[in-house]
Image (cartoon, rainbow, N blue to C red; front, side, top):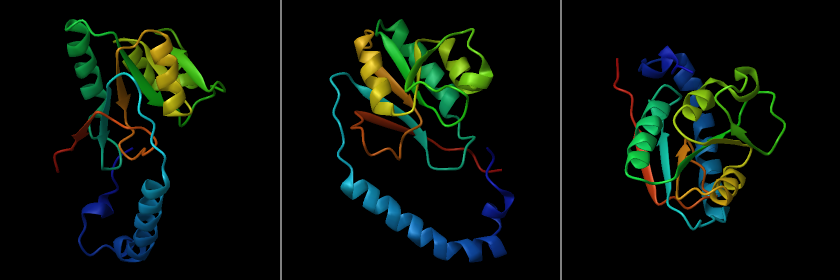
Length: 161
């Protein structure tokens, strides 16, 4: 997903129209954060996230980070939240030969690096990864998920054009 062009236009009518709605979004995010009951896991959780609408470089950074941790000897697993696809399981181990229509293209890229779990709930995915030997978990996205205590947050920022 690319950031819409009007996002960078200072006097855009879209921006003027959407501004009041953004206050409701901010309020909802604040309430979500206040009422969340975050879970602490027994292994380090590293979240690679961003604060823009797609294209910030999360997945390539996740792959490089996983490679470094694996070279250092850590059994590293990746959790990717399922948004689209035809998978109907709560947690699915993505295999290199999984169908993109079922799991999506990013999880397939990640699965070429290390064990990658596609989960409807990140917490369920983390539990499954730990049961399968994970000693470090990387969340590809999830910065705004307040249900999980992350040990490290890494934000990617796309260079403006």
